[in-house]
Amino acid sequence: MIHPVVVSTAAGDRGLAGLPAPLPLDELVPAAGATTGAGAAEAGEWEVEIGFGKGRYLRRRCQEEPGRRFLGIEVAGEYHGLFVSRVRRLGLGNWLALRGEALYLLSAVLPAGFAAALHVYFPDPWPKSRHHKRRLFDPETVDLVLRLLRRGGRLSFATDFLDYGERVVEILAGYPGLRCERRERPWDEGPRTNYEAKYETEGRPILRLEGELEMDGGEAPLHPQGARAVLAAVGADERDEED
Ligand SMILES: C[S@@+](CC[C@H](N)C(=O)[O-])C[C@H]1O[C@@H](n2cnc3c(N)ncnc32)[C@H](O)[C@@H]1O
Image (cartoon, rainbow, N blue to C red):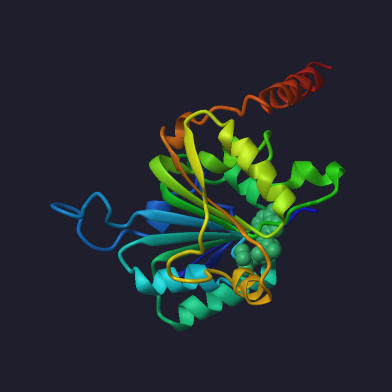
């Protein structure tokens, strides 16, 4: 299904028409705070949350850290609208919310290497094997996700779907240039998202991961397990064009 992209900021909502790709994030949400001296490097750094749901974590971070900027991606129009109306009501300006399909936005709309942190909490696990290609973390798509991060950028991930979580551990362990570890305890500040709060109350086991990209996302390579399939698909597209 095609989901039209909506680009929302404190200034209003628009479609992609008339906006260049990759999106000019610094123009859409200018950095606030120091631009010279101590703290300049961190001023206005971007953090991204993919599949933010009702937006509990993203909204809290926007409120608590006005010097940073937050970009959220959510395919469900209802949740996107909920987040946007809440942060506007709070008068916050340090956010950009994209309504759209994450893998499309990552591959065609967002720049590489701009984010200091990336958050993915309880992504849809797509348990049936014929649907694995829709997963955010798959050997054929993981480079698209990690390419958002700058050198030294941090990944935080959580899932209650332990089979998928173990597969993500395996995929990330095999990704060149990413250091990744399981986090054996909850986040210091408590549950971050609605799903996490619900599952913690129910006592469900949760697998959490933290990682750091040791290169700029602009240089993110294909995953060794996914490269052959990705390159075969590129070859097939080129052959179609020749026919
Ligand atoms: C299980 S919910 C988790 C929501 C939130 N992260 C939390 O922990 O409470 C998964 C969320 O990801 C969103 N989502 C699923 N597939 C997506 C996609 N391809 N692109 C963007 N968002 C997606 C869903 O609409 C949903 O809000």
